[in-house]
Length: 357
Image (cartoon, rainbow, N blue to C red; front, top):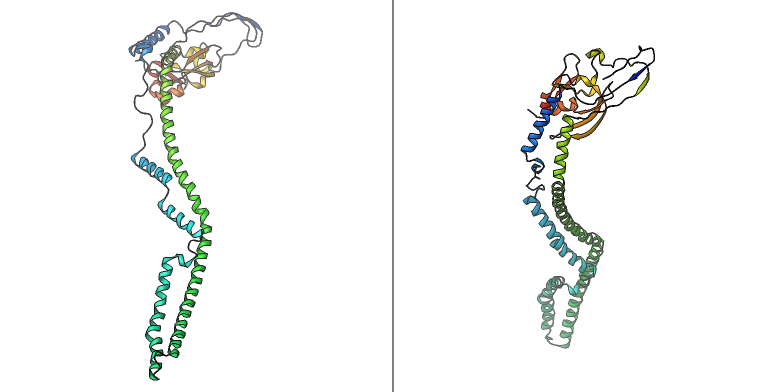
């Protein structure tokens, strides 16, 4: 309210003002009834002891059967390695160490040489020896020293032929084995790196299990923290709802102001010179709560269903009050928001907005 006198807008005046920060008498029963309804709802839930319990089920999804199987396979591969890799490592190590450079140590190569000798031996026994013998039989000199010398020369030739063939085959074998040795040496780093790949696979499986275990711990911690604070949080929300529905209290003060009489606020032309913005919301069951009518807006809490509660001043009025913003209420409780036909600003039916009917 404003009291005292003053000059027009062009002169100076002395003015004494007393501000009362409470609803008018006719609105108090409605607010007090709403608070009574809130208290009944609160007590029906059991008061402070009726705070909702934490979700009783698991808050962490378990691994699927496919994931479990994949983890087991990864662990087995990480622990045991690939059987192909193990065999390859053995062969590679033997090749690098020169195990296959000596043809005589290779039974397959020796068997191949023996097989390659047979055609020479067959020719020697089936053609060369019979020819020598036949030549000496015609002259009656079979079994003579000359006959024996001819057989010896033919045998020496056979041995030389076989030895030359073996030497050539051995050289080719060595060259091939040496090339394989060099190639194997170049493959060694890649194969050795496979060990780290297997280790990483094992670590990946372990990390997945670690993350799952940590998620379970985090869920336990969240449940513990909720249970520790639920009663205080529940009461705080309750008190915030009461304060939002009925700020209460009276603020008084006196002072002397020298200056020009302020012109009617910007909304006087819409609602009439006798109405201030703060008073507008108190003249109907639905209160003006349009964000466009307010300033110095600051959040101070939440209602029981999570709506924001704000402290603010109506433009042109120094008094602070508490309530909701119509634009936000329209998003969650559109049935509680109405457009004032005279001004175009939004009004909120607090009983509907707070679910008190």
